[in-house]
Length: 319
Image 1 (cartoon, rainbow, N blue to C red):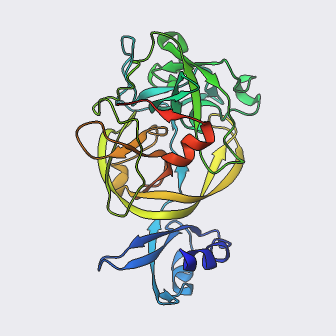
Image 2 (image 1 turned 30 degrees about the vertical axis):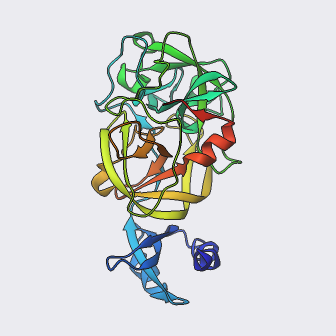
């Protein structure tokens, strides 16, 4: 990590370098991972410019497409059906008015947290409240706006075919903080009070820190229940955010201290899975590890859950 701190800012001045993390190479040695944009015309030149070692630490290049926030435009079917209340989480959902520029967007209602004794649905900033310009729908996300299940992407962009399950409490985690999170206060009777997640069930009220090769799983709107392993820690990653559904670029955010998860072929995390809670891969009452929010076709990224809960002043709802 000390070597990583020395080089990351300098190397990421090259737009082709998308991030760094601490990981383990094929031989089991600690290494510095460098994520390089595989679509860059000069990717080979950039790779050749990077050292193979730095102060005795192996430097390992991983080619990837650009990291993107994992909300989704309309398409796809998985964990998308409307549920009879009280609903389970790990399901399609989003801001009721997430329709602009000819598209609708949405993500995953990830889990249940408690803030001052009030239950809230936890998801991502870019799923619940990233509409920050009037733009294509003549409005911005505001506290009190309904959050629906399923999301607009799964009801033909017609909110009348979905149900209100919570009310947005705008916390504006981005761009200022180091987490991509958002919450919505549960409408009584609309969400299971035990916080059960589809195909995972109830979780622990305790959390656990990530570690290399840690088995993890998640339940999300697009890919459902999937499993993988933590492949990197302390990642510095650059992610681009839109100002509304299918809108212009609002800002590019560089996150630090993130969790990296193997995501070959987008089988662990894909567009629409944003907001999914990542938990340890055990059968009964798994502990939360991170909040998934971004990725590429080879790598997924999660905020450490402890940092998310500290930002929100929240605790996990579980056993």
